[in-house]
Image (cartoon, rainbow over all chains, first blue to last red):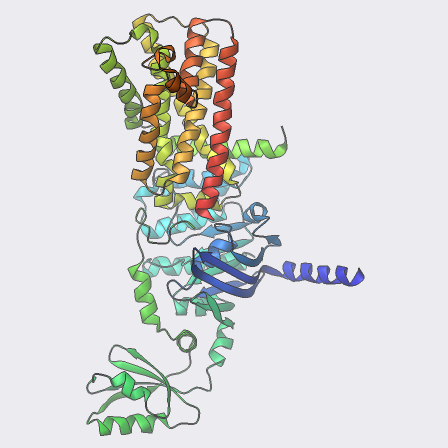
Length: 348
Length: 247
C-alpha cells in the first residue's frame, strides 16, 4: 500500500511539473492512422514546438490535447486532467488558437472577446475590461467596435489569439500561428508568444517553419507520418548530426538521373535535391568533396559551387524526416484555404 | 436546481444570444418563415377548402416550424464550414449545453415570429383567443420542439444542401399530415396514427384548444407534455449524433 501511494505521489508530482504528459496517444480516422502511439512531456512555463510536414499529425495531436477530438488509444494529461475523462475541467484552463481564425465576422472585435469571456465563465464585471485590456495588448484598440469582417488577416489572427486568452489560461495551444501572415504580422505574433511565455503561460505550438521553431521553442518534437521521430531542445537536435558532414553542391549542368548517380557514390550516405542544388550527407570520415569533383570530371561537368553546410535544425529535420523544408512549405501553402473554404481537415 | 444546471443554462443562453445576433434576427429569415406557410394557406383558401377564421392555430404552428427549422437546420453546418464551431467545441461546455444554446435561439425566434403572425391574423380575421397565457405556453413548447428538430438535422448533416433536403423532407409531409389544412377527424385511421408521431400535430392541437377554451383541458396538457418530451428526446439524440460526428 505504501509503495502504491509512493508511486501515485510520484505520478502526481510528474503531472504537476509537466503541463502536458502524453503516453501512447493514438488517433485513427476510420482506418487511417493519423497519430501513432506518441509519447512526450511538456514542461510548465516552456515553449514546446511540434514540427512536421503537412499531414504528419500535428493538428490532430493538438485537437486531442485540447479536447476537440477523442484519442483512439493512449493517455494525455493536460494541466493534471485526463483529456478523455476530465476535458471540461482542462478546457477551463487552456486556450486554443487554431490555424484558421475562428471568430465571428458578423460581430465586432469587442463582442467576440466578450462572448469568449461569457463562454469561459469570466465574471460579468470583468469581461469588458479584460476584453479592452487584450485589445490594447494586441494593438486592436482602435478597431474594437469594427465588424471582424472588415479586419485584415493579421488582425484576425491577433484577435483569435486574444479570444483564447480572455480567461487567462495556463496553457496555450497555437496551431501554425504565423502561417499565411505577412512578415510584420508574423514577427508581432512571435513577440506576443514570447511575452505570454514570460508571463507564465506554457505554450504548445505546431509549425512547419523550422526557423520559427528554432527561435521560439525550448523543446521540439519532430513528427512525421504520425510518429515522433526526434525530441529535444533545438541545440540537442542539431548536436545529433554534428559529426555528419553535409555539403551543398551544384554543377554546370543538371543531368537526368543525376540524383540517383550521386547516390551511388560510395561516400554518399543520403542526398536531397533543391532546385539545381544537391544537399549531400556524407558517410563518416569520407572525403566527399574529392568524390564529388571526381564525379563531375567523369561526367564532363564543372562544379559550379560547393559549400560545407553548418548543421542547423533544418539539417536535423531533413536527416530525420527525409523531407526538405521547401517541399514542406509548398505542401502547406497548397492546402491553406481561407475561412469558408476549409480543406479536407474537417471536424474530427 | 443544481449549480451545474444553472451553469448549463447560463452558458446555453450566451450561445443563444450570440446565435440570435449572428443568424436569426435578420429580415430574410422573417420573410421565409412567414411567407412559406402563408402561401400554403392562401393556396388552400383560394381553393375554398379551409375557413381562414378556423386555421389561426395551424398557420401559427406552421410559421413556427418553418421559421425555426429553416435557420436551425443549417446553423451548425454553417458554423462547421466557417470554422467558428471549433471555438464553441474548444470552450468548457458540454455538447448538450452547446446544442441547448442552439435550440434556445430558435426558441426565442419562434416566440417572436409566432406573435408576428398570430396577432395581426387574429385582428384581421376576427379570430378569438380564449386564453392568451395558454396560447403563449403552447407557442413556447412548439418553438422548443421544432428548434430541437432543427438542431438534430444540423447535428447530422455534413453540408448545407443536405440539411435543407432533410428539413424539407420532414417539414412538408408534417405540414399536410398534422391537421393544419385538413382536420385529423377527416383523415383515414392509418393517417391519424401517422399524425400522432408528428410534433406538429400536438402543436396545432394545443393552440386550437387554447384559442377556443379558456380552461386547461386534459388534451391540452397532454399535447404540451408530448411537445416537451419531443424536445428533450430530440436534443438528447442530437447530442449523441454530434458526439459521433466529432469524435
